[in-house]
Length: 305
Image 1 (tube, rainbow, N blue to C red):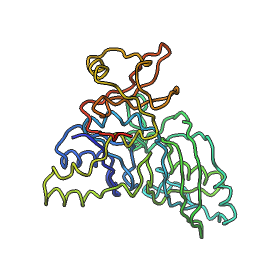
Image 2: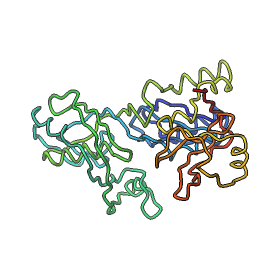
Image 3: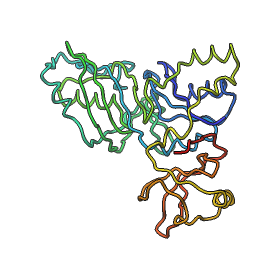
């Protein structure tokens, strides 16, 4: 069973909790997810099953969109509402200052919070934080594409953030609070977009459980999206029957003999003569086909143009 299903992760579930549930529902061990969400967060969580797990690291557009609640005048050890309060301020942040938040776009540096899954010397930061330990963390670069303040009153508001993967929204809010001299925490978080997937693509766990209980796990297969959905922006490369056989045997293929949708220096999705997706590849300097990722026994079929 190969494919992708987008889940609406509820609060108080970890991303790994969702993976475990999908393993039981789809009766397969080969399951992965496309981007960790904190337990307090909810929203879009792509789940990859079977051979689709090989596509996780090759998502063409892995930018994220979040809708986050924030509050000025308080800080916590987790940078969100779930943590222990570490400071309180009566500083009032006016509505006029929201324009400065919306201008905070471009590349920034963030120091990963202690309560995060980042590994340092083989240990998760949150494991150290729960013991009361704090260690030095190296800043990481991330990109904020846009920030829109959707509502704001009395030091509390809602913001919509478009950003690159790896961005900590609670750290973004914390850092803004530090700049304003009032402190700030994240009060809620919904991921509304992850790569090509949006809330409209999501299924609720309870709905899937009910469907599987009523009609059996096999029916869930019809809900899977093809791996090809991830790579729609990549042009196609099509192999004939002889080239497909050579590919199966691990032979290096001459790019000059392959039918490409267009010629450029980027990534192609490679289809065999039966019109199924079998790999991602590039044209190498020696004009051979350089394979980036193979997909075994895919079930993606394309139509003739």
